[in-house]
Image 1 (cartoon, rainbow, N blue to C red):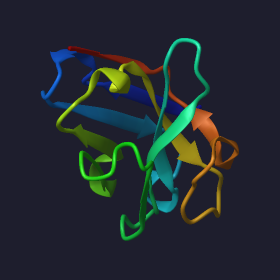
Image 2: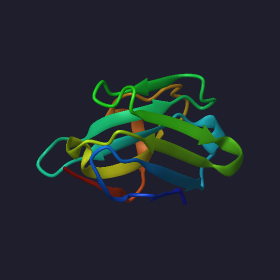
Image 3: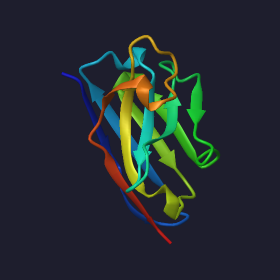
Image 4: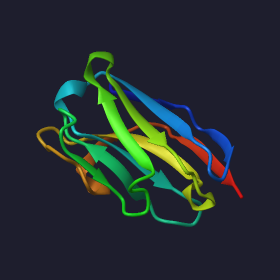
Length: 125
């Protein structure tokens, strides 16, 4: 059974930082592209960042480029998202997701077939 467990969310003031973690089990983590997506109330789900299985290729939403950094530790089956210079518009539920088997770098919501339960990030002004 596949499990993706996010942690590290919370409340922070604008300009602050948070680091999200996602620990995976039940799948071949080191062979999967992985990603972070978010959804704010009343808005569509948005891809934030994704990495190839080897971490060599990355994709970021324009809105987070230069502020967020995604990384992974395949030995620990863990995906990370370092979020700096947070803005109120970054407030959302953040989800970790595993890309479909054989897909090098997931980019779209449809590219993922396993999702975590999410962790809430709230940024106050």
